[in-house]
Image 1: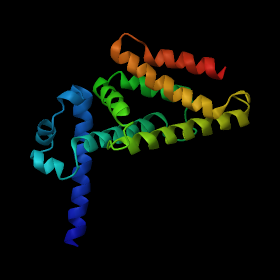
Image 2: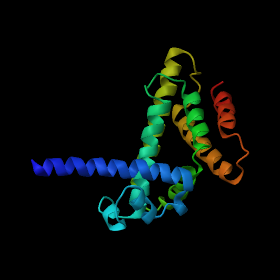
Image 3: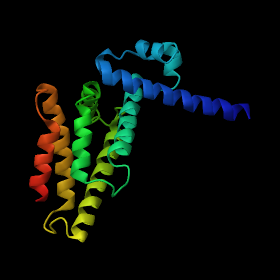
Image 4: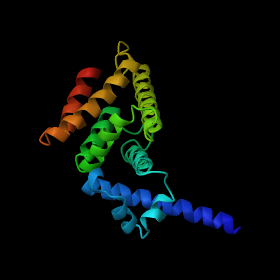
Length: 192
């Protein structure tokens, strides 16, 4: 029984680390979110922090996974609850408030093309999940008659992800860019 309690405490501490790391990276960015700063923020030593993760890269890959879980819950809490274009635009709009996470995402997205990177699996799974979600929503709207049957759901899913990610990369270079408004324009043009 002691073992089970220790396991639960470990899971809770890992969750606390991820929640805190998410807040710190959002505020100061990946480059300034040192392991020591994160350890201090959760009341651990650097060695204690790394007991929960095999590397800093694994920790930050898990931060990105947590960010996606929270965004999905906030912007698409139910598979059919919100307009997909509005939901993606809402997530993009939210990302303007967390530039550190956007930088982390883009940095890791590039690095994770290497199959040995700790975030490689996350990005492969994320792409598949996102495309499946978009394809399903497009097909459902086509069946309901609200989207043209001429649209290719698979291609629209790939384009949606490319536009959303690309806009965020451009916004990092030009913070005056209206990412959400530009995405909404794309979605309207693509689904008209």
